[in-house]
Amino acid sequence: MALFYTLFFALLTINIEVNADSIITQWDQQLFDRFYDTPPPNEPMWTIMDGISEAGHYRSVMGLSILLMAYGDEDHRNTGKLLSSAYIGAGVMTYGLKHLIRRKRPLDETLGNPSLPSGHATIAFSAATILGYRYPKWRIPLYIGAGLVGFSRIYLGRHYTSDVLAGAAIGTTMGVLVWHNRVTLLKWEF
Image (tube, rainbow, N blue to C red):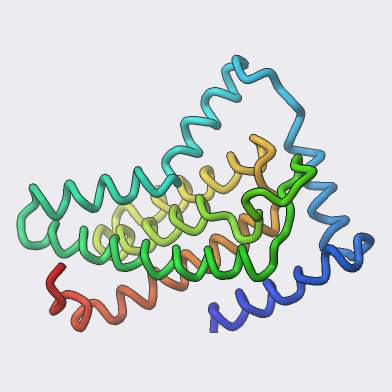
């Protein structure tokens, strides 16, 4: 059901280039203007947000996944495999939607790397979902961390709020799908 809402939301935002006065565009711009304040890159808060944003980078999640698979016991290796599976599934979905929707980033005049959905938010929420199932006591802090990654993308001027929300929905959905199919996925050798 969450995947349906994600796709529905993504299809609604395809209209953004055609109808610049849409409610979603106005809402996104208002929130963007509230959180993005063009701070200098050496401001402490900017530096903190840039560091938080890195937690949603593919290198962070894949690095954790590889470490778990290479050096962990059987449970940790399985967690690493599930993280990799969620990352790959979420990445394919995000990449496809970015190039289907082709929404410009808030501060870009050219298309460059499309904005919707946020890849960092997708990766952070897929990892939070898998790790939250694996370590239930850490679920709330993991989701707070994923939410901070999403917020940092807006704060740094790289995404609109709807980009982050779509990424969070895709990442969470992919994490849930991977977790609920873990028995089958863990049979595969990679």
